[in-house]
Image (cartoon, rainbow, N blue to C red; front, side, top):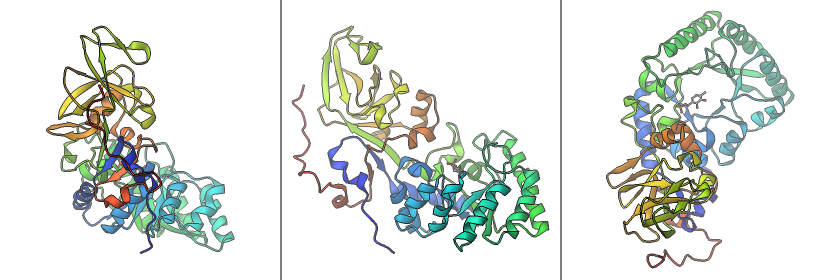
Amino acid sequence: MRPRPPQPSALRFRHRPTHVRVDRSALLHNLAVLRRAAGDARIMAVLKADAYGQGLIPIAHSLADAGVDYFGVAFLEEGIALRQAGVEAPVLVLGGLVGYQLQHFLDYHLELTASSAFKAQQIDAEARRLGRVARVHLKVDTGMRRIGTRPETAIKLADELARLPGVDPVGVFTHLVGAESPAEPTSRQQLDRFDEVVAAMRDAGTLPPLVHVANTAALLSLPDCQRDVVRPGIGLFGVAPASRFPQADALRPTQSVHTEIVFFKGVRKGAGVGYGHTWHAPRDGWLATLPVGYGDGYPRALSNRAQVLIGGNRYPVVGNISMDQTMVWVGDDQFEVGEPVVLLGQQGSETIDAWELAEHAGTIAYEILCGWASRVPRVYDDMPPSQRVDDDLPPSPGRTRGGSL
Ligand SMILES: *Cc1c(COP(=O)(O)O)cnc(C)c1O
């Protein structure tokens, strides 16, 4: 195995109270749960958007160490990042591609998604120019209307791919529009439609070896959807694909987000708080100021809605969230500067999960997970402390506690 470069974002940890913590033991637990559901199918771990906000490279290395031998990403640059970090397993880039990217796909041995005869011919031409063979997955659009070729044209495209000398057709796949709603018949209809296409390719002798459909929601709730490969993303990170999705109850969230109180402000009854004074103190009391804001990925839409955990209890976010700071009403409760605050995750017996934040912000848990900004360090629970300290900065004098009122 090649030496692994240190992770720059983790190195800043000690110097910023706000950080995303990643529990890699939960990652391995979730992998085991998903493997059971996958049966004989191979797992392609989908690690797009920086592994759903948790750090592409550390997550890929952990999964590779646990035996995952196939990765999916959205974009070329994510695939290149995996290669530059020494990941040698096959990597499929699931998204659409443009012609000028092709040489890089081939240089970095990334698998491509082809959705049309035009794309297939472009890939073939570039591969032959470079004296290579491109590994290609044919994408069939069974309802998403995003990328992919229509079922009617898929069979002809498979035929074409099989005849292009610069192309090795390794897979055929589709994506479901609503597997997180198991009661909806759409997934079954899409699967049936896809199966017809696959059967026709098999009859024509043009079926690529790897057939794949299932995302996390399908894998956990749609019977008989496994095929040769399954493509879980969010399930690896222990978050359900929908707010009410009991099939995901065995999963454990890998991501939690932490900060610390940096300041207390005593306010009189009626005092307005934050930009636009959208909240006024109901009585004399204390505000705790947190060094986190929408510039960190704590959505401004959570203003006057979300709660945080301090000392194992819930406290409300009050006033508008700023780019870098957030105020919390603690009333008469006593805390110290440096007191740990949980924005997402568990503290004592209380938990704020990604769906709770998502619903307050009018979005889905996926967007919360991958929305933490790059300035927020990612910290891995199993990382040796020596890797967490930044050598470029002077030694930390330690945390200041108390006495700052
Ligand atoms: C994101 C994605 C997945 C993974 O979806 P989850 O719901 O996170 O499991 C699988 N396949 C494709 C094509 C995707 O874009």
